[in-house]
Image (cartoon, rainbow over all chains, first blue to last red; front, side):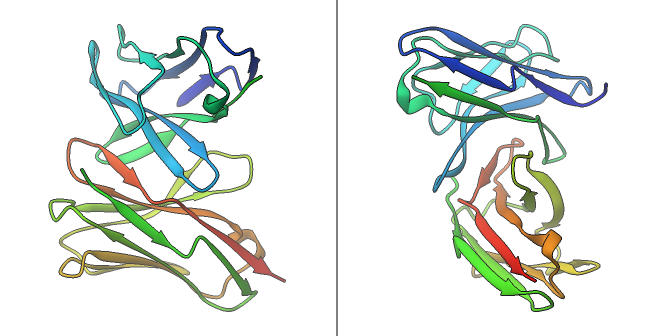
Length: 110
Length: 111
């Protein structure tokens, strides 16, 4: 199925655990992004990647790690989950400035 | 970096009336301004965009205007319908495919 997909769609994890959110795109777009969406804050950029093996911090990177060994995949890892990281996470790929979002992952940290 | 402010945060209109959402940006280098619509429980999707060499763009009932001098742009929805109810995000691209989003406007169209 063409497009950008995220997994899992829903995740509940405990404080202190490591959790990885997956993102896969089939278009071979160079740029990929991770946002978190919280009420009152809109979409805030966590990390982005301009190409394979090139990543950079966004507005709220603390507590997150990313990697991009292949163009099509851009996983986001919470090294030690905290309750403040409870949020909806959106992965996106960009081309010509247009962002295409995945379905989102609703993460709850208890 | 770029800072995008969006107002209002919530907006209720009667069906058939017009809705206007306004955004300002800070980086004069920004040259691309998209608007995204996010229906409840779904992903944001692009509905209209405008580039800095254009002052206005229309697509059926929606239009976007841009004032580069004042660094603000607006979304106009005419003849609103219940299916227009959603959260709308403005964004500005300051280059390098890096979009900065506003905080969103929850639009409710009352039948």
